Length: 241
Image (cartoon, rainbow, N blue to C red; front, top):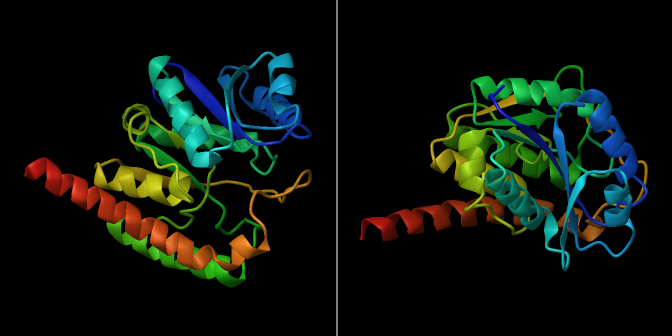
């Protein structure tokens, strides 16, 4: 684990019913870390509930998506000189007990992705989402020259080099916070590894994407990766000109 302060960043959009339990579980698992809730333009009581529990809350004026919320979190982490950041979802699907592994993995990597696909996992994905994950896994693993089995997992950690990079260059578009950020990290020479984690199914609230989004997942995920790669290549060419 990197020396220095660690930050748990929780992007939250209309999660008033779950945010309190998530904060409590994080504190139970890692009472030594700081907690930041990025209120992503919520229209409910997410931000007041989080503030009442004594955590730092950054409120965005309108909903920008997980990528935009995490961009704010990385900028906060850089300015406050944190040496490690762990993203934990506000819906209760991530198990804070896995934070230890995500932080420990930063001893030899810049980004540690929590993979839901391992022998002890009960997590299941089918249909277009499964096809997308297989395609993205193969593409990013080839770029990384090391296996990335779960490229769309949002349960992950970032060390000092990743925080510095993502504070100024973090994609806010759809899937940018997962697929796009990994592509950016790879293209900037960051070391990416994985560790097994537990993923629960959402018990409270509703997912931010409906059935139509799930049906379009494969095409949009592939386009997100291609767009990020092309953007990085064009920027590199521009720097050489």
